[in-house]
Image (tube, rainbow, N blue to C red; front, top):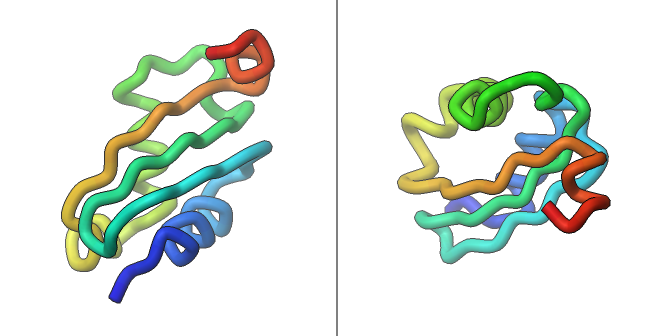
Length: 79
């Protein structure tokens, strides 16, 4: 079974992050991901970076993932 912690670890392993929070019930997850890699990117591009970090897990193990993707500056400003 997929856990919020394992999703968090997958994101952190595949993307340089300043902060990651994940909550969920084993199938549906919500994440807050803060990364400098998001600078200058659209919301879709930011989500694609997170999906890439999770790789095959997004297709095979994780049913749904909603996320807020912020740069460190956006996060500090209350993003």
